[in-house]
Amino acid sequence: MSLLRAATSDDIPSITRIYADAVLTGTASYELSPPDTAEMLSRYEAIVQQGYPYIVAVDEGGRVVGYAYASAFRTRPAYRWLVEDSIYLAEGARGQGLGKRLLDELVRLSTDLGFRQMAAVIGGASAASVALHNACGFSMVGTMAGTGFKHGNWLDTVFMQRPLGEGTTTSPDPDRYPGTLYRG
Image (tube, rainbow, N blue to C red):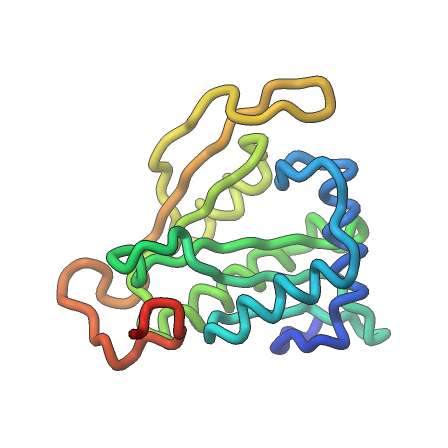
């Protein structure tokens, strides 16, 4: 069973390889050219410096076989209680329940930080990703048809959402927000 832990900058080369495969062969990302390690490090630093969770799954041999992070859905201040999840797995790690473990942990960490909603923006309307998010308590919010063009096909984008913690039943605690993005 893979170990889940906080990602570090040392994990970025492995994360870059996993993401490059997703960009080149899949539809989860609408990027067409994989970013290099320097760009992936910059993206990682931007996320963790604001206090968002960024985790990896490491197999028994010590190899990073998946990663997940939460980040801002939008940068307007009223969105600050909503995070968007991202999950990517190495090809050999798919279909073994690892995505669910990563997403469950990401939900837990985001809830502990005081976030109230998590959104999933599923490129290519991936049936596996929709099923994963359903299994983790997300509900379908909507589908935007033909939002991307990749691998010679028009792709739909699915939006899913789930409440975190008390959701919208109470006001959020502004002192629990981890990031610096919205602080003056």
